[in-house]
Length: 159
Ligand code: HEM
Image: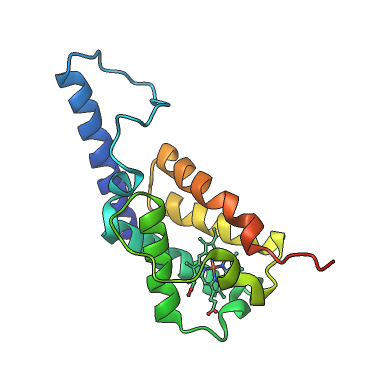
């Protein structure tokens, strides 16, 4: 279900962008464009809030099944974490949402998350996006937005 919905949504966005290019007189191209300036926002290309909600649910399902990281959520109000993660990704990708949570450093500093644990979550995100058949370009854009948060999220070495 997740895969059908997301694959379909992202596919639609890519198809309509290429139709627009053809209508404007450009030669149809089989190459993946590297310039995203003329494309809809990443939020739109992913499929908007319904698709982002499914990605977050898929990611949390994988994370909660992984003993390397799942204990970090033991004391958390899970519906709140889910909602805030959806809001966060919505805003980060250009959606019209309001993020109501803490900044990344404040939200994670009590958890002493390691760099390895951060990478585990990123791998689960990649697996979720793959399973949902999100195209490589959109996967890369999302990872490029979230990857730089590593410094704020992993445990700071104490002086
Ligand atoms: C790019 C990566 C990440 C993003 C974008 C992200 C985003 C978020 C957001 C938006 C919240 C809610 C903040 C709030 O309630 O104010 C949150 C909470 C949380 N995150 Fe992350 N997170 C990331 C990585 C991680 C990693 C790697 C782990 C653990 C291995 C983790 C564990 C948690 C936990 C346990 C909470 C709940 C904290 C609490 O209840 O106080 N996060 N995260």
